[in-house]
Amino acid sequence: MRAALLFMVVLLAACNRVGEDTIDAAEMAKSAVICREQSTASRYLLINSTWKENMIGRKVFSGSVLNKARFTTFDELLLTFHFFDSLNVKVGERSFFAKETLAPQKVYKFKIKTFAPVPTKSYTYSVKGRVLK
Image (cartoon, rainbow, N blue to C red):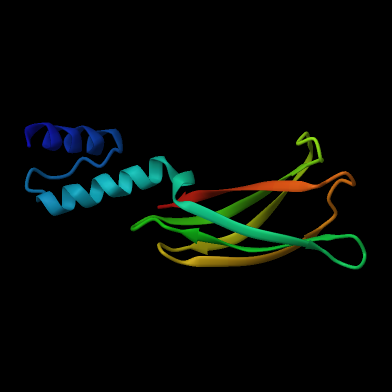
């Protein structure tokens, strides 16, 4: 019990969330969760995407980004698609900026059309977001 309480106090101090002496356990726990969400933002933004090629050769990516954080809101999402050839060698990447505010437990849906490098056979994706304070 003491170790857990000490951990929460150290965690709160690391996040510059120094409070009053009368903070109750629920507020400390909430502050610890907020601190964890803000310090490891990439763990709380989940992206899911599929792709197809349209008639003029452009890749069309459709998908969504889920904010699975409980308290933290993210904005200015950066979606990055990494393209690979048949030998799994990276042949390029494209990044797209979404001026979107993503509240906790909310979903942002996207549809992006772009030209991918010619030898593209597969892709991966990543998402980053700025913590809104």
